[in-house]
Image (cartoon, each protein chain N blue to C red):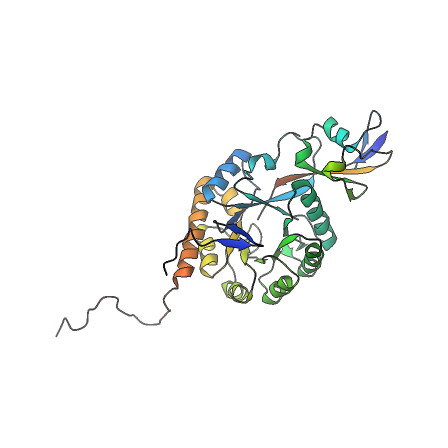
Length: 67
Length: 262
């Protein structure tokens, strides 16, 4: 199954939830924000948010910034 | 009444802070250096940006792991937004991921000056306030815009001293002073600070706080500058509260020298 992850095609071995995707990417769930098809996936719903073929997923992180 | 810096606190949206310095998290040589500078500065509010994760980068580290949230309030910002819609999206993402309603709203209109787009900023402020955010908008040193943001429910206004990262200091202390005098919400001078005297001047004008980043992170000795900024903000605040003497165009002796001669 293929999704679009941060603008690029990304292959998944099988059915996966957003939480499983983050785990496969080695990302600490507390440190990122996730959008699926332009809608925020709240932390509490990531385990149940199943990915479908062609889903557009954005993983955003916090970074240094200021003035 | 003697002014004690310890009793004088910054209050934004009902939350109190001992330090009036707000600090950024960008441009440091390392997260360790950033953390040391935050501590040395005494800042209790730090701003962070949200952006697309580089999936090839080291996944495990994050700026968030290097901010002591027991001491420092996180202020996510909407850096990178050029429209109200983009800013609102980033604010919502930050709120969900960080569990904070606080947002430093920043909508820029021009990439070479990073000048605020005040029309988009006002629109985004209106939407975010309605959604329950505590909005601290970055804006121009324009009194009317600052008041409009206040009317829209901004928790503070953050006019620029000069362009982001320019280090030019406070280019228009007169207009900043007008905003400070007219605003009912706290005024945080944001952007343009290059050295400690710039931060002190902002506070002497009566600003409620100063937000800076590059002046510390990109100078030759960030740790020393972080200390200097913390001291400058306190010194400037005390100086403001002390009520300066009037300016005169001729000398006035401070010692009783009359009558000793002749």
